[in-house]
Image 1 (cartoon, rainbow, N blue to C red):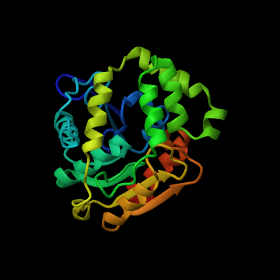
Image 2: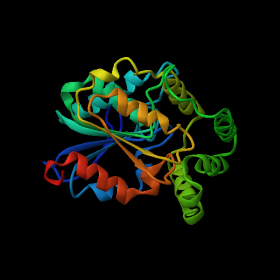
Image 3: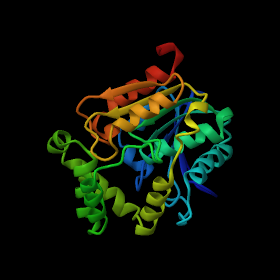
Image 4: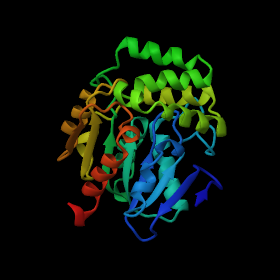
Length: 266
């Protein structure tokens, strides 16, 4: 059920009346990039899929965009959907938005799952300069080539060898909803300004942190830092998985979400 009358574009999936789970994707990724995961979650949750600012059918992203703005966007989308409280799962940039949502809207959050993300700021572990150079170079290439090059960074080599078709799926998503370089820049600047370090100890929601130990984009040690800073947080490593572990391991990701978020399964 798509909704995009004003504010973020969002879609609803699954059982009305079930626990609400909001899914937030990363930089330059639309809700279509979740691929199989929403279908796996739909029997257990009322799933809210969100296109972040500048992505898909959501409004444009100004260069002044901040992570706090993106967190407030999610709260406004929940208002429009008449949803008071939710669980929240964010990956990468989506994980930064999820952190800020937990800090700005604590009364609307039940449980928090942060995937392959970072606290940002001076305490964060930075990507290798070589990785940043590869990402910048990819951004200058024609879109199909750019997506292939980004896949080589965000997916593990083993997964990409076994599933080269995933890049074709990303290309088809891009063709259907072309992404502007201005949006990529706006989101990248927002991510670069992200710093939740000092505030993370005030997060009240029970929190799960998940990361592939072969993440080639955001150093996995950032997930350890997040888990250490958030009171009572649990850290789960996914052996051999790259940055986009939800694409590589959708069944395992769904299993982790169900076991952490649903009381009957804990």
